[in-house]
Length: 435
Ligand code: IMP
Image (cartoon, rainbow, N blue to C red):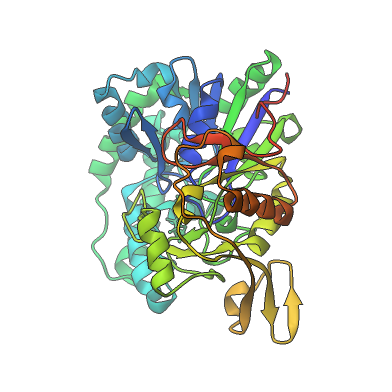
């Protein structure tokens, strides 16, 4: 078994892009399996920032093939733009990218419905990215979706699009009272785009299983985070896909028992974009300080992220659910100068102590985090390259989280650059399984 998965442990934006990029240096294949261009994976290369939304983070490495797995929803317009942006920087994207023909397509009417539905929800809005993600997945489940492979067959595509659009336009016009989407232009434009992607469209599951048999190293790249997962997350304030390790098999066609190791990336504190429960959120000046220190503004929408202390209850839940081999901790440098640093180790619910993450976390108004306080540090940790070079309180903080999570913290990231990552105290030398 030669594959490794890296997913998000919290509500997304944990810094997966950088971790995945460093692992991708040794991967033969890098695979996205869920979400769409709601994700924003930032990779800093030689001081230059690149944000990927749909294309896997291995695209910067010349020997890795990058696959958009069948569980991903693909906006054709966005994909074309993202490819062009990378090509303009000289990357041979056509050679390095493959798309599973089973991927469902996000059409303009999905974005349209996403925006209308959010407005319709009013106070109850989810705070989606407006990229049409939920409506595209809803169509997939309702069996009115259209897949990449379907567009390659004009007559079939025409028939599917006509049926889908008739229904969508009835919803847009009759329920939401907005202008319907034109059919002819949509048909022509989608066909033209899909034709451009034709050489890249493959059977992704077959590609992966063959690669596995040949002993290739496959890296599965999670999007969003476990607490935004459709089933495991803070429903209904979740995204519409399976973000955890469990999403990999369904979202790619790769057998679950062939995944060699599983890691999650966790931020040294909590952030969340959009609405929904976040027990450790800080509404005060401290939250603002974390936001500024961590430059916590969304990579996809630019929205300010909600910030708070590390929630070990939620994180432990996600560790157990995913069956992780370890955690990679990011943004430790951001906590410099905070005194004390707090970690939620349980919740108080009335006169009860709760140590598991409740399903109805959002509707328990008297749920309060129980904090443990740890000493902070004033030194800049960005230059550290070994765990022992961290100030004593920073080492203690990492050890404390490790005990809370019950799995090793394999790497600690202390800044945005590729080099600013060090092994945890109990780190393995290699995050890849031995083949
Ligand atoms: P959607 O995925 O656009 O439907 O949005 C659903 C929820 O997931 C919203 O709260 C979004 O802010 C959140 N979300 C979606 N993608 C990301 C991400 O990549 N990082 C953080 N939050 C995300």
